[in-house]
Structures are given as C-alpha cells and as structure tokens.
Length: 150
Length: 426
Ligand SMILES: Cc1ncc(COP(=O)(O)O)c(C=O)c1O
Image (cartoon, chains in turn cyan, purple):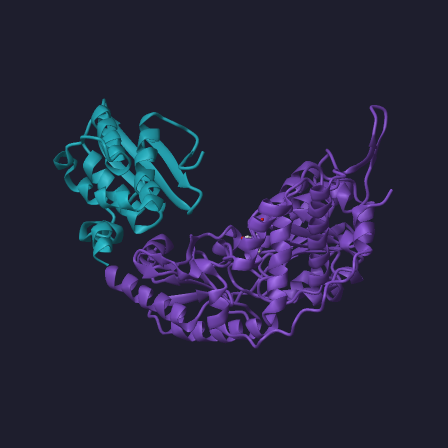
C-alpha cells in the first residue's frame, strides 16, 4: 500500500475534502465546461480577468479525489497569473504526467508536484488533467463543453 | 436448393452428455487459466464479471483448434474445409437454440452482441412497425444499449418512449407498468437482469401483460444468461438478446433470438453477401431467416467459441453453480453490510450476484484504484445506466459482480480492500 500513499498524498486528500475556490464567479469573463464521459467527472471553470491577468478563478464540479484536488490546486496556482503563464503551467503539468522524457524542472511545479505520482496510474491521468483542459478552453473562449474523449 | 441447415439435420445427433459432477468451485477455477494470475503482486480477484466474464480453457482451445484445423469461409465453398467451417458454425447455432429452448435453429441470429441485437430489432422491426405517435415501453433500469437505439428510432419517427419507474430497492413498479399501455404501444423492451442492481425482473408477468394488450416484447438478457437457465418459449417473448462474452465465450459474438413468425415478416438488416437469394440490377430477392439478417462473413470463430461455452455450461452442473452463486451473494451482502458507511444500491427481493455500492462520499474511481492495488478488479462509474445513477442521485457507483468461479476469499479480499480505502480517506 506504500504506492498508494504516493498517489493519495495528504495534500491531495486535503484539497479533495476542502476544495479551494470552489464557487461560481458571477459575472465571469470566461467560462468553460469539461467532461469525462467515461467516468462521469465534470468540471466548470470560471475566470475573471484584469487585462491579461487572471484576477479570480472558481470551479464547480463532481469527480474523484484526484480530479477535485487537481482542480483545487490548479485554481490556487493560477490565481493572479497571466494567461501566458497559465498556458505554460498547463503544458508543464501535462508533460509531468504524460511525458517521462521531458526535462521539466519539477521544483518549479510547486505544490502541483504532488500529482507526479499519477503518472504511474494511466487510467487516472485524465482525472488529473480534466480541469486543466477546461481552464485552457476557458482561456481560449471555447463555447462547447470539452471532453477527454474524442 | 439445400440450405446448410438441411445438410445438418441429416447428421447423427450428438452423444448424450455425461451427467455433470456436483458443483465444486475449486475444480471449476482450474478450468479458467486467467484466474491463476497475479495482479500488482497479489492473486487476481476478478469481480468485474458483469463487464465481461473470463473464458474456460475449452473455449480458448476451441478458437485455436478452429484456426489451426478448420478455418474457411462458410456457406460458399464446395471444398472440404468450407464444409467443415459451415458445419461447426451451424452446429453452434443449434447449440444456442437448444440452450435457450428456441423452437428452431432458424430463430437464432448471430450478431456482435446484445447491443447489435437491439439495434437490429430497431432497424428492421422498429423502422417498419413504429411510426409517428407510436410508443415503446422500456424501464428506468435499462443499460444505455436498450435506451439509445429506441431513442434514435423515436427521434426519426416521431414516436415516444414510456418508462416503467422503479422503487428505491430497484424493483419495477408493476402497477404503473399496467397504466403505460395505449393503443399506440408497439413494443415493450426490458432488461431481464439489471447490470447495476442485479434485480431479476418479473419478465414472465411483463410478457403476459404486454400480450394481453397485443404488444410484442424484447428482453435484454445480457446479464441473465451467465447466471440462470433461460427458456425463451417459457418466457413467451418475441425477442431475446444476449452477448457471448458475458457468458464465458469470446467477445464479438452474440445472439438475437426472434420467434420465427416475426423474423420471417421483418425486412433484412444489412445488405451484402449471404443474405440474398438472387441479385440482378433490376431485382433482388432476399434469403430466408436467419441468413437474411447475417450479411457478410460472420464471426465464425466467435460462434464456435460460444457453442463451446454452452457445452462447458452444460457439462458443469449449471443449476448447482447458480445455487452456489446465490449463497455467495448472501455471504457478500452480509460482509459488505459490515463495512461502515457503505450503502448498497439495489436490494431487490429477487437478485443475482451484482453488488453496487457507494462508500461514504469517496468517489468510486478512488475506490477502484485502491482495490486494484490489492489485486481486486471491480467496475467504477455509471455502468452505462445513467438513469439509475439519477434515481439514486449519485454520479457513479462501485460494482462488484460475481461469477460461479468466485469464492468467499474473493469477497474477503474485497472487504479488506474497502477497509484500506476508508483508512486512506480517513
Ligand atoms: C444489461 C445489459 N444490456 C446490454 C449490454 C450491452 O452488451 P454488449 O456491450 O455486449 O453489447 C450490457 C453490457 O454491459 C448489459 O449489462
């Protein structure tokens, strides 16, 4: 069970139980929905912008501990960042989970590093990345709900 | 013209099967090679039989034997191998007919699985018989495969779905069912055993009531055939569908049973080779049932695998197996009730070995991942039955589903895994 402690670290369990920024922003400048039809995880991401900067971010949704904690930690990380910085975080997060050959500086990932263990659970990677895809859709003003399945 | 069926009827009957030894789970497990496997360094505990069942060695060997010694196309060659392939293919059809007590081999159509069987009915019978304002009765506990094809047909034709509701134990409200009929009701299509709740529906009664209104019935038997004997003539239904892979046969083969008078009156399904009598550019005549519904080269190996799975079930004291499973289900119910904060979904009076549940507010994916680390395979998600999830107001559930090769040790491993889940989630 030691492997599982790697996956379900205290930080993840805490953000699952007490998700941060778990609210609707009204009005929101940007909004997107993400959907994982295979397992029924759903997430909504709301953004308020100030010029190029994400002034506030909120999310709603239902899903497993990994997806909820990932959305919560994403909002913490992204709040106050520029859209360009958010995009870089998206790419790095994606690389951390799916590209073992990437020479990503993991120290830079901050708290997001707790999700590095998800790499060893291929069926769960989509849970961790769903909210990030929704964030990106919100940034790009994608109107139709995005989905993890094509 | 002689059909291959005529040739087969001239063959001597098969020797009577030896009487089966009383059911013994240890001996049965030895027939399933995959069960000896380790997962994550632990012995495999396979409790996802509702999704697909494991295959006995006899079935695996039959596939290998077919491709090693018998492979040819069916119904078209005059050569030796083609005749053998045709014989074994049609023999499999005969085994299916006997297995479900159909009146004739002609009532057995080979399809890809339950899903294709239902789509076939919708595309042939449905498109011809169901029109604007007509109604189809289904239930709240259907698998998506018994909702979506009808919904699509209704959209196309301007017809309507009427839904039999269920109570919180997961039993159909039969009183409401009676009230759903109208002069426009054209079909009742219901699940025999729910893949989420395990409920065994009172299909005999459902058929009788439908017939009293002059309405034909399709029964989705995907979860029934692995657990109990099915007799389509005793049920009296017009259509019955099931999948080979859930009853210990390969994937990609399944059965649509249709009573002959219906099948004969129905238009063909797909067009192509094997389903025609003659083709010229001005006129085409279709072949007879069942060929009319089996265009193109069929899944020959799959049908042989299915026939072999039936032989296997006939050889093992299937009734004893069903009794064993019922006992195991009781053991499992009691064991799961001992897990704090566990809520069973589906507590019908009549049910088979399907145990869906929620565990406090821990998401089923997390439950599934943690159980997997203990070698325990369960299903987590909405189980292709979102209306059931909606009924219980849950996004998803965890499901352990039993087969006759499962043991009390399997259930103990499940329960111990669930305690680990609770520990991790505090
Ligand atoms: C009750 C029920 N009906 C239909 C199906 C669909 O079967 P298949 O996917 O083999 O076509 C399933 C499979 O899960 C089922 O459980």
